[in-house]
Length: 555
Image 1: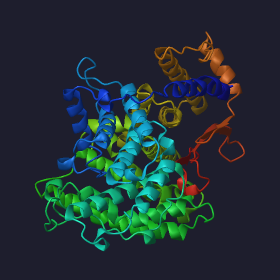
Image 2: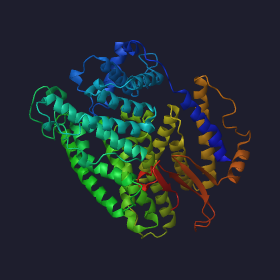
Image 3: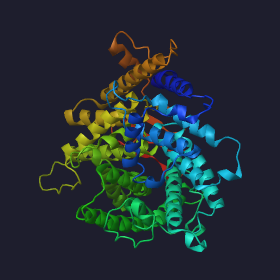
Image 4: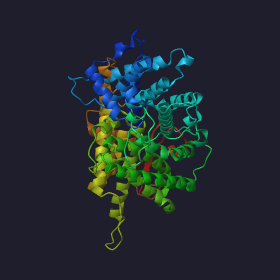
């Protein structure tokens, strides 16, 4: 049975790898012993500064001074930067991911040491922010960041960061701007992790009055100056743009993840309208940046789109699924498709490839894994709908549906995403669901285009994916010196006999906390006797809004 293959092989291997990758070590007497050579440190720090520090403003770079907290923050910056430097020459300044894990565990241990009131300071908040981002970029308990983000939020509120510095008598211009930057970075971590976990954001807009930071560069924070126009791109521009939609995104997270609220389409449309208007204004600012002499990098633009568009996608996708049966929801289908194409733009030829963003998709989680998977499923499902429409439309005069992307371009995006999903597994991912689901979509598309039996194509694809992932995970276990015989996929000598046995058990239903894949017969649904896969990837929340991916191959 195919679910036994998955349950006993890939799942067991994945759990073995994850359990053995946990590093538990005592902190060295001198934290400086963890620091790599200067040349390596400089390269990794620069990778951090050009990526996450340019979006999540945490430190004031010019005044970043040595201290015990400085060493811990530096280790975390190195860990984040190293996730963008894994494709370099192994013989030249290469730092393995296991070293990043060691740095992260060291920082976690340092923060967990006996708590003292003296640690209630800005450096501690900065360290906690860096720790959560390092866990997300390196895949270390990244699915639990929402829990830690709640503690970080309460610590910041206990220190009064939710109160705007204008209420604090005698505070310097530098300290006021730094507090605003850190507070809005914390809010961004909270709202993003809320969407990842399907949990409530833990704060409402009425709970704080801290204003956004001024549009100035780091070098201008030492003395009071007039803020630059929003059309001028600075070190703070992206954080300001994220803050403009923050209040609505908090409402979206509350709407999607509150189990007591119903799925009100009118409310979803209202929230969508508010977000769309803000994003339209932000898009105009991005265009203005290009003429100001200094513009965001491709990485910054891609990350901003992912961090913002995911909220619109989560609003529309649950209703887009129902649009086939209810034409009144067609707007959500169209909106979800357009949003998905924008999220998957890095997989198209419309924008240049960015190595930093590609590295983030290979190692970051969970939003850097699940949101593109959700978008790819929507695009693939739309391609299947196009093929079905072409096959059933025999009238030469019937109007053709217009689509955002040509068929071949959409198909190429899905193909490149499948390759990326496989590369992610090869890079250390233990969750094979995104690769399995996207490969099944592509297999059905190819079968429909070529007129081959869909059932056979899907059965071969699923078996092939499981065999390949099992081999990857087995090799990883062996590299860790933890080989466990008997956990791999026992493939039959005769592939055809394996497929025959697999087809006999084709009604497969496997579910856990994150995924349920159903391959069911649709002969009672009016679609003939063919087996039609319905793939559902649902998040931890039972609310429709947090459904990471729920799409049907049924036309």
